[in-house]
Length: 310
Length: 314
Image (cartoon, rainbow over all chains, first blue to last red):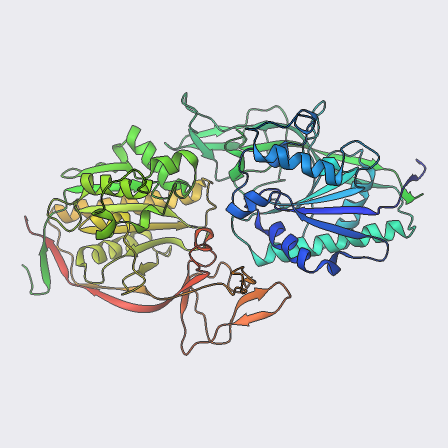
């Protein structure tokens, strides 16, 4: 049995709402917390709320120039200021300066990022990889203490890929991805759920900071292996829709031969992979332009070592 | 044999199907684009059916509109406005559409226009009626409702002195709105597209049967008539301070009684409906209506009669 790992207690923690300006649960919550920060206080730390992309929020769009949540790579963060650069590049550098610099000792200890999806992903917890010990323990705590609905874990980093998300600026991070919710809409049920999940996560940090020993455990998580685009005509327009049998079936097994798309003439297109995979982000509105009909994942069981504070 | 309760109506020869009036309501966009390539499904003998994308620039950007809502600018002022450099794109577009499919209120206007929309509200497959005295349209809706039964097909009457708006389809003699939800903006759901497709199929079947000479006896349909819009509670800065209550969310067309919850504040406080009588809310939590200051619309259930109709050429 692996020995417990020891990490420093968390003192600098932030939460971004509105990294995408039309994903409303996080925007509403962040605006509320900016007026009433008490809800984000615990005995040993406090969380700093902020609006990820204020210009996009004002216009109620995902982004103004480019997707902010894809802009935290070295290329953009270390680029020199230019006249015609997208707003989000400027904003990414500001965020990196305030909550980073990414990869440095001064960076914030932890950052939460609040998102919604049009896909039926429920209360999904997104972590970069199973090797991020503290976020994995936080997910385990949430799963065992928030029992109103399942909280599947999605590990988003592909091997060899550089991290690009807003919370990669901090030393560790967790994204809450709640759906389905249309863009620009606030559903009371998801808003309440997001708030309760955050409260649960903060309870975990408080327990961790106070010295609680968290033993090793086994946990099921979904790891991304690739992305599937829509079938398209030669002009780039989509030529088929997500099949009704796949629609809303996030995190359920997709087997070779199962239908995945339906053309406008009613023909079925079947999944041609060799093995069962688990799809997520099925029919996410923002992913049509990113050429993603759904993300493909494998289900794994990971052994996570114990954790306590230094 | 014709009775005095049967009206002779002109045959319907020129039909248009509009998609993309709002560029991010995708069922109509993709159905129209498909029918433009492969129109067999929408053809019927004896009539011309023209599929058409009304707001191509908004469709390209997958946004509701570029400058202003196309579905609000078919009033006489905007249709008659002088074209200048800075005229909103949608007003210019409305005049072009009026030129091709209108002119509105003239004999040259198209007979029938189906205007395809989606909503984020849980409205199912709703048919929108503009005029309570349009026997032809009411008969068509009666036909469609029967064809789709037991599936529900609510009919929403937007006739109202202040609340009626000048829609794209209003240039036709018989305007028909088809509003299917729930579907997020920018998303194409196969089940929603299929529902919309069925409604159009039955609508076109009706036109064909009518043109062939069938007499439709007087009928009565239950409809929901628009009464009032309800905005979100807001603070003095105009910001929304409460959201649609979970008990009202997704409950379009269900009865709302005095004392029922309608909003939930961020502090967990419930705001209840205060009214003298039962109303039937619709467009509950429609994304595009936050800026139009509309959380939901109150309607009342009414029975609407249509005279019998028969094509005047039969």
